Image (cartoon, rainbow, N blue to C red; front, side, top):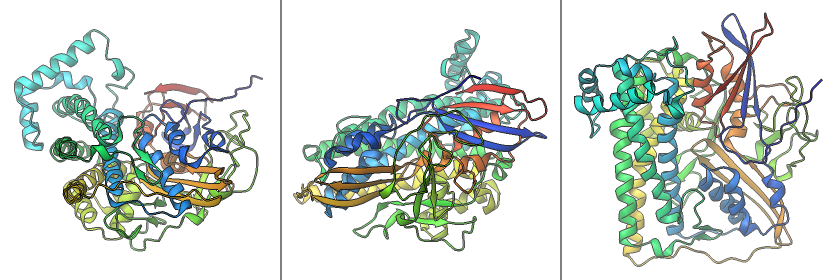
Length: 546
């Protein structure tokens, strides 16, 4: 018997997720989510200077770099017990908001939209009708028959040459695609425009962070970008933010609503049960009470009775992960003891641990944040969620779904983007008063412990640190993809993505487009290898999906 061992030294990049499902009578009966890489940065950090931790942890990923650095410095600052200057908080908040704008635009257009938009179908579109459709749906600054004819000609060139490039592995022509050709052409055109915009949005990090990815301006105690607090640099940031926010309002949200209107049945597919948000974006000095996106927990889909969330109730299980056996532990006491082994769906089958909140599997991310905010009556969230439900003519129960998850991402992009205008004004006012303090001095204690909790584009992110002899004695972090893509726990309870896939209809096991829709709706920071098992023939359809 052959033995398969998967050890991947790369950090959390796309390309390291495997999903197995069993299909019976055309629907998913069982599912397994497997992370195919070993991270191990917690081990690398042991014995190092706590001030260096954020440089290491942001190498966990090539996309979510800033957010790991932010959570890390928060954890060390919590251990030290310092409060950083207001300017440092504003710069960090603006960089964090920029991360949301960049990631969510890229996710909708370049990672998720092609699960709903058939690019090849756009070749059949009438450019004149497409221009009229776009005029009715959006306020995009581009358009007209000539523009859409040009986009169509470019797509035709790609298709006829057989060089669709990154679009080559999709399931064009699949029966699950429902958009008419003109809507497909409009969306394909905005896909290209979003490519141009995302490059600009990434520059927002470079203005106050030095570069993107892996911004360098965060330090324990504040930020180092004091020389960037000038009128020119702040105006440069504001100009790009305004262009990005205009795109969100005039293109992203109209596209989201237009596409969703053809897929309302997905308001009943892909849901989970419990939702956790650490919350983020303080509106004043009170944290977490003043968070724009509140901290909290929704249990059993009960929006009438939201709960508070406390990091002390977090544990991680290793029963089904390739780690040394042991009881579930809080991250402060967590251990990272890798034990590579076989891929055994009844035993250990992943490098992911299984995080649990108060013993419960919880989805994290845009839907969790929006549900917690909605249940707590956050005005902007409630207004926008109710407007989307009314526009699509679907009940609130549709929020607990793949459709709801995708809609929530767009809603929070709009709300966080609007809030950034106020943070820019606050920074301008502080600098105008001559206040350029961005750093708080401190003494590293001999022994301490602390945690940093953020809600980042992909979900709830927490870092926990123990310091001894001024060095890192233990460091654990629980990231969004671990919450969402983790395996069964010691009790056998499925992880969120595993749960969400149960009941998903599959029209063609050899082209499991429906699985991609739900998996991609979580915005995994990993790409997918999908394996679909036919329980009658025991045939395994192995599909590589991008």
